Every structure is written in C-alpha cells, then in structure tokens.
Image (spheres, rainbow, N blue to C red):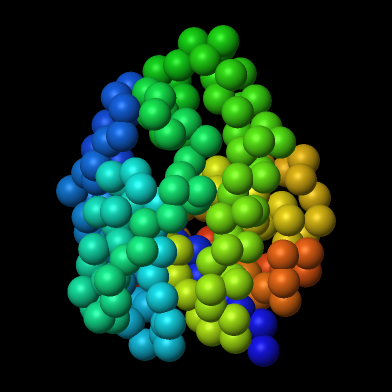
Length: 186
C-alpha cells in the first residue's frame, strides 16, 4: 500500500509585508471548514510547517481528529525567516522582490529540502494516510514532482486540499488538486 499525503494549504494570512503572520479571521474560518471536511479521514499522523499560519491552520484539524501535530521544519515555505508576501499581496512587492521570491520558490535547494521532508514523512508512515498543513510553494513542489514537471508553479487556494499517493520518493501520483468546494459560499 502507498502512503497517501493529504496536503492542506494554510488559511488566509492576516497580513503581508511582515515576517511569519498568523491567520486572518477568514483564514481561521477556512481552517475550521477544512477540519470539518477531513474529520472522517483515517489519518495516522498530522504534520505541520513551523510557520504560524500553518500551525494555526493545523489546530482545528488536530482537535477534530485527535492527533498532536508534528512540526516538520523541512516543509516550511521558501520564504521562511523573511518578510511574507502571498500571491494576494503581489501588488505590494517591487519587481526585484517579486523576481527574488520566484527564484527562491524555484531553487534546487528549496525543492530538495521539501522532497527530503516528505520522504521522511512517508518513511515514518508507510501504508498510511497523513495530513500535512503547509504552503503553496511546498504543495507546488510536490505536485510538480507527481506530474514530472518541475517548471510549473501551482498555487492552490487557502484552506484547500491536494492529495498525492506516494509509492516511494521517486514515484508519486497526483490524485486531486485544490479541493475546496467546502470553502465556497452557498
């Protein structure tokens, strides 16, 4: 049996232009809605990035499924330790900052770190379903690896779920991308 990775993008951040923001009120609602959606999943473990927006997004899921989140430093976003800008804050960046962020997101070092982190998660949870609350850039790396195209950038919605089935670090299959129907207003 393969490992199923259930990747949850953190909820909407409270601010851009600051280091390590927490969630906005909308982000908290997204995290709660995503936790309700995943409550029936047979999760063996719950991982989270060390960044506040991921930890705060993992809290409702942890409470709903009764798992203690495991912080995995290697699944932190490429801008860990820097001023945070998401795609919704892109207009606030100058061109040089935007290009530097894009280069960091595509760097071989970031890719290697993320893939190493998920290889460790998979090795610790063979034949199990695990959730990982992380970031758009991190999810983009894994989706790119699963579709064998590292040149694309994937930006899932805040609070969305992406599923990857892993048969080992060299063979991952994209099962679904950007599941988010529960986040849409009726």
